[in-house]
Image 1: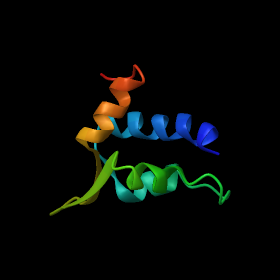
Image 2: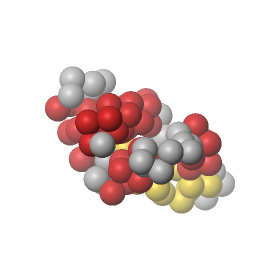
Image 3: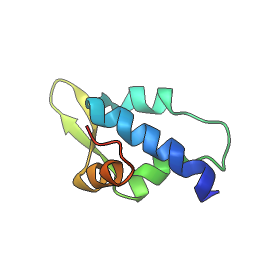
Image 4: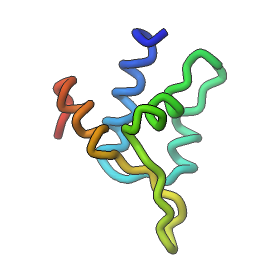
Length: 78
């Protein structure tokens, strides 16, 4: 399943790298009904993205340094 999930994890990390996203937006956009496609969980578990509470904004999801390296390794660094 890693082969199937990795391109989707890469897409998610790249999407978040464009700009910090509200947690609720990330979950709504990347929700899946397939228990085998745990894209959000995979990205968090691998340390590619993190949640941060910002006063007045709510919970934002941002890319980490590890996530930036992941994008660069796959030719998707901005």
